[in-house]
Amino acid sequence: MKTGRTLQELAEELDRQNTAKRDLLVDTGALHMYEASENDFNRVSLRVGAAGNYEQFDINDVAHGQIGSHLKIPAAYYNRMREEMPSLLAENVNSWFFKKPDTRRMLRTLDGTARAFLSSRYRCIDNYEIAQTVLPIIGNMPGAKIQSCELTDSKMYLKVVDPRLETEIVKGDAVQAGVIISNSEVGHGSVSVHPLLFRLICSNGMIAADEGLRKYHVGRINESGDSDYEIYRDATIEADDRAFLMKLEDTVNAAVNEAQFLKIVDRLRDSTQAKIDPIHVPQVVELAAKEFNITQNEGKGILGHLIEGGELSLYGLGNAVTRHAKDVESYDRSTELEHVGFKIITMAPHLWKRINAQVAS
Image 1: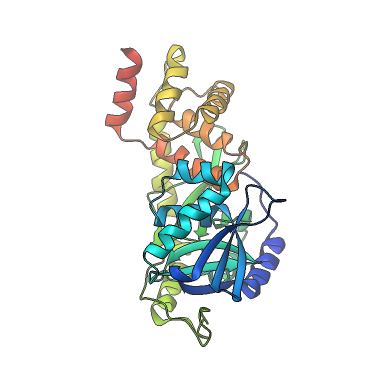
Image 2: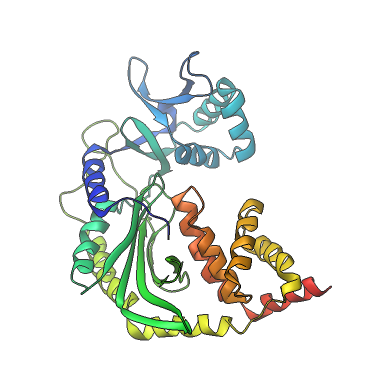
């Protein structure tokens, strides 16, 4: 499992961001993208407001992607303009903004940077609220440990291990129960809670993606406060958000339930019987990579870990994926690969049969 921040570092940054972030509701006619300066080539910024009375923000990768998607500018073309001709990108974006100037969007900002460009119906369930809810629960779990946590531009992650629930998949290969809680403040996924398995011999994490709870950030249309654009949060959380946070408590506790844990363990044990012919290992990795959107470079790393591990089965392949998850630079992608490892281990029999048929042909 990839190492992130310490819990203290996470708590300090959540507290800082909770004070520093701002949300604006703005019509697209009041937005203007521009090339920042000749001395800072390949960089564009965003102005909000009327001429002579505006604020300006840098734009991060997340917000760039959402602006392009909203305006239906193909990602490859958007990124090429951003890299090679930022003035052309600004011209394109501004033209589409002004074509429908009354379209209202939520602009989420932090430290002078536009970090998300979202629907006005986006429901703000923020990392600070989630952490305030789940950290006391984790603290009341005897022996529970936050194995890894991180706050990226896209998401917050809390990965918790409960050593009271431990068993072996095969002799000498023990796993412990855990839970991952994640949230995105910028439209990159719902609030989610999923069971997690922690493999002791290599400190890998595997996320049971088809189990758990999700809460999507969709609600009624937001309204601005006294200023032209800024949203002021109520002092109290909405009633339905309170109900969700109560359900979140129950789900975190249920995710490390013994029956749930053993159910997932049984699926992993079954996967040890799906053997991979040593002759066909590279082909199996290549075909699985295509099915589960694993890149060519990631596939090379996974192949190396599979051979090194010596467990030539679906179980071994999934573990090779989660082992490679520690090697990738991005914490977001590392966590995605922990999901992928479980999906591979528990793939449908017809898919496994098809992969073997392709290998044999």
